[in-house]
Image (cartoon, rainbow, N blue to C red; front, side, top):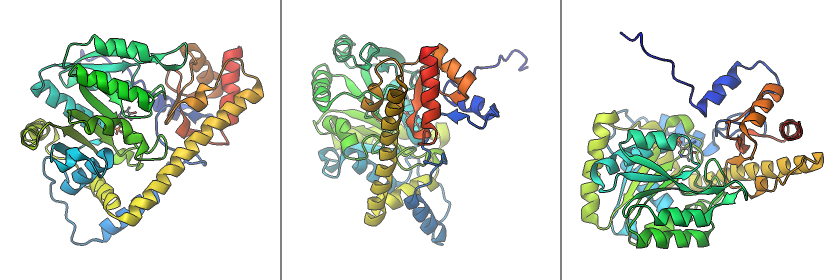
Amino acid sequence: SFDHVVRAPEDPILGVTVAYNKDQSPVKLNLGVGAYRTEEGKPLVLNVVRQAEHSLVNDKARVKEYLPIVGLAEFNKLSAKLIFGSDSSAIQDNRVVTVQCLSGTGSLRVGGEFLAKHYHERTIYIPAPTWGNHPKVFTLAGLSVKTYRYYDPSTRGLDFQGLLEDLNSTPSGAIILFHACAHNPTGVDPTLEQWGQIRQLIRSRGLLPFFDSAYQGFASGSLDADAQSVRMFASDGGECVVAQSYAKNMGLYGERVGALSIVCKTADVAGRVESQVKLVIRPMYSNPPIHGASIVAAILKDRDLYNEWTIELKAMADRIISMRYQLFEALQARGTPGDWSHIIKQIGMFTFTGLNTEQVAFMTKEYHIYMTSDGRISMAGLSSRTVPHLADAIHAAVTK
Ligand code: PMP
């Protein structure tokens, strides 16, 4: 019987929305989950997505047949080009295997399972802290998960020395997870120069970099700038693994569209790797859904839609950056004790406020503001209208 089944806790991130939905207050604010909202607080479907969907629906030649195990070929090709760059030597050499997966999470999981089966070192090092789902995804994929130092709470910045020391003392060949840009939850990224040093260390020790790219274009507003870390590694002739998500940058959250790329040393190896990735996917979900990938492919292959996408993407990134300045200024105006400059220095969707669990609980109880207990707030969920309420709550939490 199932009588012995115990109730599991809510997911620490998605559970925030569950609690938010139960709150009846008119001023309630959900800054938990990382989903973009407009100035009016509404979810956004990009214009280019609407246009692409419109043509897809009106194309009577389109059918609903199964995709191959690896997904839509055109989507895979265009996704590799987007992350590695149109001049990528790895792509030109046919050394890159790209398979369509279920958004970023599914790409991480398929990549993790492939590595657990076929790579000689089964330990993956993830940054401390990292996105809460990473340890679970990789453990269930069959890898052993350890952490490396990343964030220094005292500077609210990168613990670069700690990172280098920890990566230096991993077993040779270990897998190292990096956030390609806009590190979640800290908003702290290495500089390009630091990435260069990290790359040297990774290559000299024969470690395997695994990039999680959930925010390309969403961090800086530039697709190329946000891919620079990945491109540095993909262009040096060595191996790397990349999980891409179109949830944020195309606003395709619920369509579950993403890609896993494995950069190999030769085209011959890449062919064999692809054959084994298919054996991971087939018994898991057989093949991926067609709709989201068709939307992405339609946008990436059409020059006008692509250009329009970059404009819409930049508008989202710019609105988030503007929220950072507005929140920072609102705290300054209130004379809130402490240095809040990290709010404008951090990169991407989230601000790692430095508020503790108790302060977060206070803000939820007294101000109906919902966020993860580590003090992470989604800047994308804020608007000019809600900034004052958040600033009041933060001020009250740190001065109470
Ligand atoms: N990695 C990171 C760092 C993320 O922040 C997210 C989304 N919150 C994901 C992966 C995966 O998201 P999705 O599966 O929706 O693409």
